[in-house]
Amino acid sequence: MTTQQFQDLQSQLVRCWQGSETFVPDSTQGNIQERDIVVIPSLSFPQRELAKITGYTHYEERQLYTLIQLRNPHTRMVYVTSQPLHPSIIDYYLDLLPGIPSSHARERLLLLSTYDYSDKPLTAKILERPRLMARISQALRSDQAYMVCFNATGLERELALKLGIPLYAVNPDLLYWGTKSGSRQLFAEAGIPHPDGSGLIQTETGLAEEIVHLWQRNPNLQRVVVKLNEAFSGEGNALLDLRPLTEVQSWPEPSQVIAITQALSQMQFQAPQETWESYRERFAELGGIVECFLEGRTKQSPSVQGQITPIGQIEIISTHDQILDAPDGQIFLGCSFPAAEPYRLMLQKYGLKVGEQLARQGVIGHYGVDFIARPGEDSDTWDLQAIEVNLRRGGTTHPFMTLKFLTNGWYDPGTGLFYSYHHRPKYYIASDNLRHANYHGLLPNDLLDIIARYHLHFDSSTETGSVFHLMGALSEFGKLGITSIGNSPEEAKSIYDQAIDVLDQASQ
Image 1: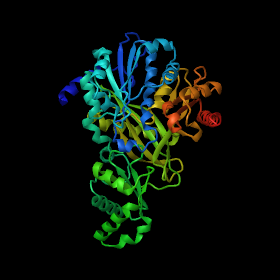
Image 2: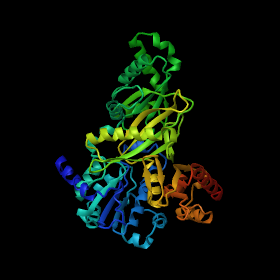
Image 3: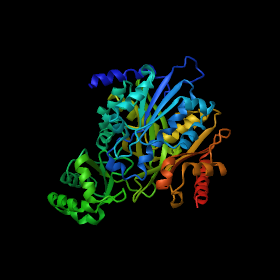
Image 4: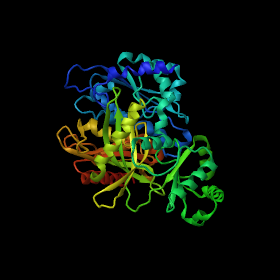
């Protein structure tokens, strides 16, 4: 399959575009077009990196929010997973649909599975099964269909070509701009503040040399952060503390490089069970970058999400403050919406700049930008430093889209707030990492019983409550996801805390 064939296929997206970031035609406008959506929730990342995330095999469930698009009676959907999903999980999402019988939506949903739990991307499993691909194709009206995924690689492009439908995601040829080194180049070209650091490094010696040069440019530097070029969620990060090596600064540069090389084995890795031996192997394979670690007692980790439409429009979708954990707060656990008011609009400004740079390169689809925010010298200002670009859907995508679909609301770029259909500002806290020893062994039906018994579900009359995801990971891993929606930040936090307290007690 040629690049030209894929570009020709992608041109069909312009016909699909309805002015909505989710391709959901507004049923009040008339002239509704039929749509067939193929959802491929594959996490097409290096499997060794995915293995660092507890229960990652169930992360295909995170895109079940797309089922809410079936509220449009003219939409049909094919949702493919590695293993069959529990019927109760599907019923749970369909029962959330506003304004349409769940039975009607169920008739327009085709669930397919590869019945393959091996540690390879879902898309690869589908490509190995010609009969499964044929069944997907038979269910589609090809001139009205498109495919969505979590992240796009050559696998997703190949599947789109074989199915003969466009892919609403970045062309894999442009994924460089979502790597750590590509992000740094993009920030520099866009004039967005970002930490001093290196370009792409391929060797251990090269890494040590770049650390020495970084230290020379920043004599008061305390720590540096090393990042695998294609890792995600902070799992590929490692910290090197330079403070025990202060005397090295006065040595000749070759001696400094030797000392830093020897110190690399003492780095603090953000992923549990990571070792220098395994990290060094991955660094040699993927390459990486090094940059100044931004110190500060008061730090926030906000992000901005945007998208570039098939017709080249750049839209800001949302901003979030991220909830991070790990030895040094670099691993994504969850988020709160919206980001804090003092820097919310600045996030949007920088997000648009990134979108403009990406659009010039020909990128379409979802993107996100992570930042570090620290108080400025003026108590009313914050210093924002861009950290990385993600050319995919992320951990903030599913909670925001869940809110959008459930409330039929809109994002106001003038304030950075989201308003429901009833013009109420909405707030939420979301996490993929509710974990407790008591959760082990709970089946989806057990969770649904707890939700109903203690009134934890989302209430459409008040547009508040909690929506749960990752239910399939509950029994085996004791892990669950949640989005708690309120009419104020305080109410969202209260709903979130109450849900956790109830789950912890009810599961004893």
